[in-house]
Image (tube, rainbow, N blue to C red):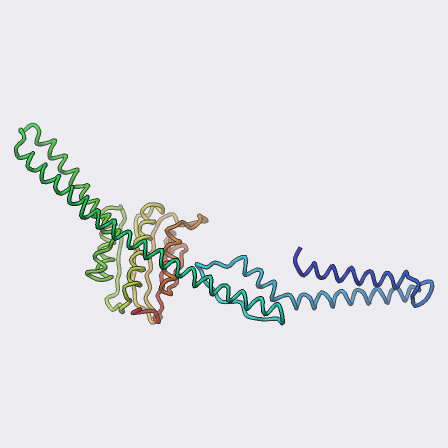
Amino acid sequence: MSLFWRIFLLNAVVLLAATALLLLGPVTVSTPVLLTEALILSVGLVAMLIANGVLLRFGLAPLERLSRLMTTIDLLRPGPRPLVSGHGVIADLIRTFNSMLDRLEAERGNSSARVLSAQEAERSRIAQELHDEVGQTLTAVLLQLKRVSDQAPAHMRTELAQVQETTRDSLDEIRRIARRLRPGDLEELGLRSALKALAAEFSTHAGLTVHARLDSDLPELGNDAELVVYRVAQESLTNAARHAEARRVDLTLRHRPAGVELLIRDDGRGIGRAAEGAGITGMRERALLIGAGLTLGPSPSGGTEVCLHIPATNEGQ
């Protein structure tokens, strides 16, 4: 039972009891009670109940709005704070709730920043080890296989050539994994070149047809924002290839007066009512770190549309 009905019913019980005492008790207007007096008292009771309900509804409306907001609040999708309305305890409660939201969002932002920073550092470490350890080991194996193949009898060279090809494919896959873990193109050549390389890689190895349209007049976004754009594009393409059963993806990065927008559309089966996984949650957390907005929904082609909007006020940060 809501707070409104609890207070209303308590007041109604008190008023009913008072009316019953007035009608049936020794202190009455007349004895026995006249019909007109009972009618007047009943009309007065109904009027008092209606007035009581209206006043309670008006007084508790801010509290009910706050209660509904509490059930729908999502720290990954921050929205406007509830307006401070009402008086006394209710206004103080709304102010306290707004302060609590500010602290929770700040704490979540700080913790997400630390987690994502540690994640990027771990990715770089793993990529470096794959390149230095596994990559060099496979390169040495290829060289040894080449020497063995040159000295082997003719009937064994075909099998050795197949082993060399398998080892070479494994080395290429290790290098691709290392590039995904640590986007060297982003650090060395910039965002546009890194996105072009990412689109080409998915077109070649993931069975997707990725069409990249990248504006040439992009403003300076800063290292953090560029990394967020790259990771959102990477995660979106991965989802399109692994889960959406898409065949075509349009990747657009454009400069708008309101900021920079990354738009990714696929022709897959869409998200539907499926719960958001860790990948989408990670994209939302990355977007919040740079003050960007992230929306996901159906695309005009029937698949999924991912839009990352970086406000102009955040450019260069």
